[in-house]
Length: 208
Length: 208
DNA sequence: GTCGATCCCTAACAACGTTAGTTTGAGCCT
DNA sequence: AGGCTCAAACTAACGTTGTTAGGGATCGAC
Image 1 (cartoon, each protein chain N blue to C red):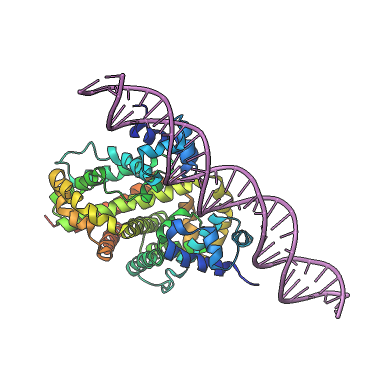
Image 2: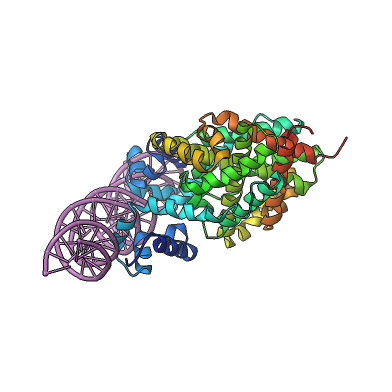
C-alpha cells in the first residue's frame, strides 16, 4: 500500500490551493505525489470522480458540534457558518462543490441536522426541508460570488473607477451602493443575509 | 462584415443548449459558424471573454418591466423570478454565469432596481444593497443546484433507493424529507425560499 | 486604384484527460 | 523457500483542447 485515495484527495486540495481549479491537472497532481498521471486512474475512474471525492471531504466537518436538542436558530446559524467556512477553506472550494452533485452521507447528515431542528420548531416536514435547502443554496451562491471576487484581486481595482462613474451617471441607487458592492467585508454581508433568512423562517413558525 | 460578436454569442448559446458546457469548444463553435477556430480570436481575445459576453446577454432582459415607483415586494419577486428564468433559459446557464465575474451594465441595472425599491421602502443604503445581493446569491445557488440535478437525469433514479435506505437507517429527519430532496417541483421550492427572504426583509423594514 | 481596416485562413504548439498494455513489489499459501 | 496473487505503479500513445504566429482575402473610402 503505497498511496491510497485519501492521500490523493489531500494532495489534490493542496494543489488546488496553490494552482487554482484550472491548474489542478492530473499530470501536475501526479507529479506532486511522485507518480505518473495514469496511475491516478487506479484510484479514481476519472477526474470527475476525484472532484466528487474532494467535495465530499469538504463538508465532513460541518454540523459536528450540534446535538439533537439544540434550538433551531443556533442550528441554522452554525450550519450556515460551518458550510461557508468549509467552502472557503480551500481556493475555489465553492466551485468544486457546485460542480459535483453527489448526495453523499455527509450532505445527508447536514440536511438532517437542519431539517430536524426546524421540524422540532414546528415546521411541517416539507417546509422544513425546503427551508433547509434555501439556507444551503444561499450559502453556496454567496461563497461562489465571494471566491470569484477575491480571486480577481487586482482586476477589480482598475475597474472600480469606471463602475463608480457608470453608476453615478445612470443608476443612482446603485451609485450609493457601489461602495457596498465593492465592499470586501464579506463576513458582515454574509451575516446580514443569514439574519434575513432566519427572520424569514421565524415568521413562518407557528405562533406560540 | 461577415460575422460579428452578436452572432458568435448567439451561436455559442445554441451550441451550449445541445452540447452542454463541456461540449462548448472553440472548434465546434467555429464549425457551427462555418469558420475555422482561430478566426474566433479576432472577435474575442479568448474563450473566457466569450463566456463573459454570453453571461452578459443572459441578464439583459431582467427587470425590464419594472418602473421606479413599483412597491418593493413585486420588485424583489419579479427580479428573482426573472433572474431564475434567465439562468434556466439555456442549459448550464447558471454555471456559465457563476464562472464569470463581470460587473456589467446589466448587472448594475438589476442591482439598482432592487436597491432602489428597498431604499424607498425605508432600508438604509447599505442594508438595501446587502439585501439585494442576498436575493441574487440565493437565486444563483438555487439554480446551480437545480440545473445540476436536472442534468443528471437518470443517475439519480438509480441512486434514489440507496439514498432512501441510508436516510431511513441513520437520518430520521432527512428520511421524512428525502421525498422533498428528490422532489422535482423546483418552482414551488424556489417560491418558498423566495417568500422566506421576502418575509425576512419585511421584518427588517422600519415600523410604520 | 490603392490603402487601411476588417475578417478569415493554414499550420502548428503545448497541455489536457484518458486508454492500452506491461511491469513491479509486497504479502500470503503451501 | 518458492510460487501465486493482486494492488499499484509504469511507458507509450491517442485524440482533443485552447491558443499563437503569420499570411491571405474582402471591403468601403478617398
